[in-house]
Image 1 (tube, rainbow, N blue to C red):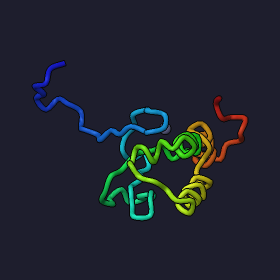
Image 2: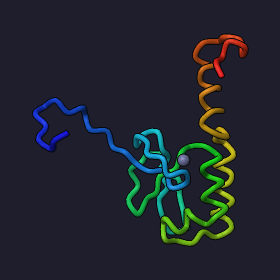
Image 3: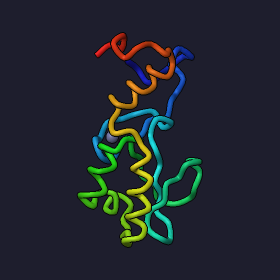
Image 4: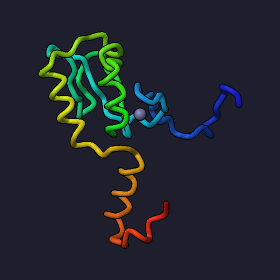
Length: 119
Ligand SMILES: [Zn+2]
């Protein structure tokens, strides 16, 4: 591996780290959260200005950072109760975990019976 790529390098895909599980993932598979005047806001467009943090769109990761206050640490801000409730409400719309999400997707993709889904 050298730094002198001669056009043979694969296309650069922006990588971000989930602040909950610390796994690195493509930017598009993570949700961006930004610091706002109210506290913390979900940046659905990925284009809001300001300090941001990335999280998997799964409840498991959200719970980890909302409970431990790690989200506030990462964004160096404080959430008020209203803000926290708004994020919890958003979290409730997300799949529980990556496994649950994948199972859901494969079910939708090919209306196969659940028994055909590989574990
Ligand atoms: Zn994560």
